[in-house]
Each structure stands twice: as structure tokens, then as C-alpha cells.
Length: 132
Image (cartoon, rainbow, N blue to C red; front, side, top):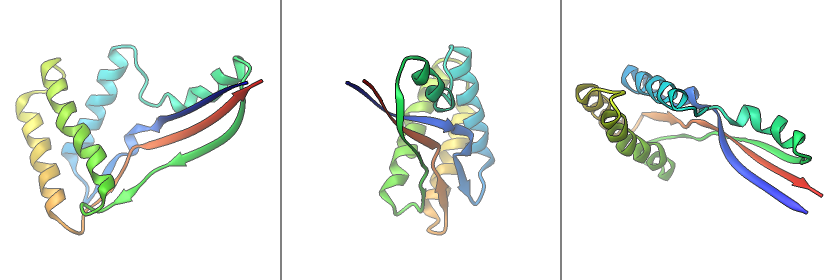
């Protein structure tokens, strides 16, 4: 028996801040575009169940995972760290200007300083499947 377990994005553009941040929303669109331009698919979780079935796997469990957190919550660190690393990568690849990256950093710092801010993490699909 083979078991397949994955956590993959299925609604990457659902990553949002409250109060809304145009800078983060623009960044998310740049990330999506850059992944697709390189042959990637940011919402690959939408395709995996069909692919697994075609390969003879039986889906045992599907679970959406999304967190809605304040800056005080540890979950805030996951997307924040991605922004830190991702901005450098996107600038280096020419997908984003340094000025745009600086604006995103400022917007995220402003959100993090506001205890009333909320972050909706990108939606992830937990898939557990087995092939007998």
C-alpha cells in the first residue's frame, strides 16, 4: 500500500489582509503570474485529486486549511517569512521593482504594527490518498 499526503494551495489569491492592502494584493498577483510563467500552478491542489484518481489512488481525506490570524499569532510568521524571501526572489528575477518590493515591506510592517489587523492565509488543501 502507498500513502500520499500533501498540503497544496488551492486558492492562493485568497491570501489577504484586513484592513485591505493593495500592496499585498498586487504582490499576490505578481507571485501567481511569475509561477505560471515558469510552468508552475499556484492552485495545484485543484488538480491533484483527479491526477491521483488516474494513478489508482483512493482519496481518504480532503481538508481545507486556512488561518485567520492577528500579528500576535505565530501563524502570521509563515506568510511574513514568505514575503521576506519572495520579494528578494521576485526582484532578482525581474518580476518586481525594488520600489514595489519596498512598498510591500512597508505595508506589511504597518499591518503587523496594528493589533487589529488580520491575515487570511493562502488556502491549502490537505489531501490523504492511498493506493492498494
